Amino acid sequence: MRNENHHEGAGYTGYEYREISVPREYVSLCLDSYPCFGWEPDPNQEQWPERGRGIARPGVPGGTEKTVLYFRRVRSISNKAELTRLQRNFDSCIAELKALEQSKTTQATIAALAVGILGTAFLAGSTFAAVATPPIVWLTVLLAIPGFLGWIFPYFLYRALVRKNTARLEPLMEQKYEEINSICEKGSRLLY
Image (cartoon, rainbow, N blue to C red; front, side, top):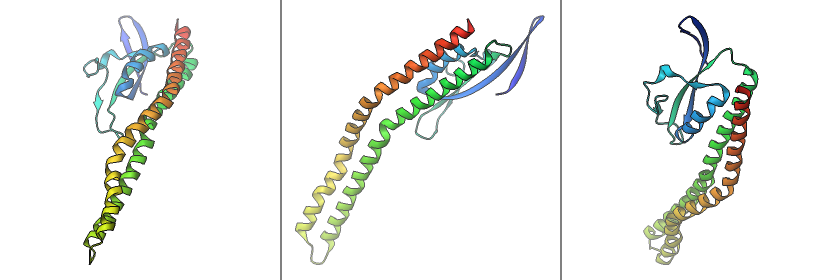
């Protein structure tokens, strides 16, 4: 966070500034929620994309694009300590939402890769049985069947596990959104 001052006419208003980097899917949530903690979009950053307040940064691990949002807040805001505490709770809820979103696919990816590798091992055994002298045809066929299934089945396994994890995690994510809502309501009450 960097501190700067802003002059308006005869009066003086000091601002503190904040720059946050959020995944694209949480940009609207942050733009709607940060004003509950006294922050407003920084009007000096209007030249950037994302409704004039952010810039996309592709190439982030996990394949998600991040957007930088710029905010400012009056330095002399009342209840600043409590608003900062609520803002930290909000930020941790966003981090937990990201973790829950990632956990939907983590287990499915690991299981699909394990089955694919096992299928590759069976096909390797089938290949070795086929090139042996003399070729062992019955063993080649016996190992090729689970090998090909090990290459086809991971797609369906992945989709089934993602559906199962999504159904299991959806109520937890909804609880996080409710928690975010109550945090923002508390922040709004402190401001007004």
